[in-house]
Length: 241
Image (cartoon, rainbow, N blue to C red):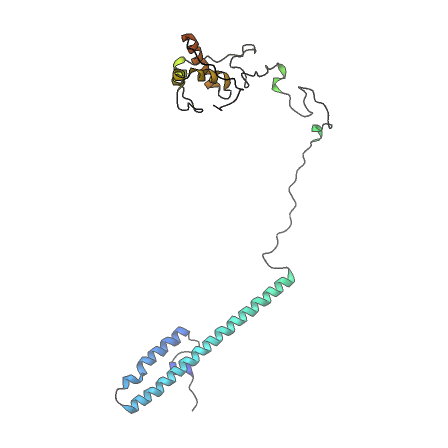
């Protein structure tokens, strides 16, 4: 006896999805299970044959669906391999190459700045094309060893107005930001080690405000006749104490 079409057995259309086929198989299994026939041998035998037909139809459709999936996967892999091979044989993989562009360049004329090798340049001279210096009209005072950044009072400079010294109260309240007495005011330092004030007034070069205040405090110590112990000589430095 020829087997019936599995779609007709399960009552599904030929293009049914695997989920629809499985749902139909479960519904028919619940309706035709041999345990539902009770003690009737003829009905039980008939239900067994019917259940076997349902299971066989479901298994045939499941294998057919698996075969179709494998064939589709194999066809996709073959198509992908063929496309990759044709791409490599043509222009190579990856995105399309960018079109070549011309580099952005510019010209800088440096002919006027040319100077012969080992040529002597006199002081104050300038190269061709160089703007004149602002200080060529007057003679600048050279820095002194005690004041590398320039003196606090430059009376010999034309139209130079020296800054007035800070008041004594502000100088005494000025707080140190470096050194071993960091966090103390100049007034406190003047009380327990006045020689340190002399060192600040004559050695520090990078903080003109601090130097000015230290000199004000030093003048006050001299006026009061405070005796200070001699400090060892040191070279001018920055905030190294």
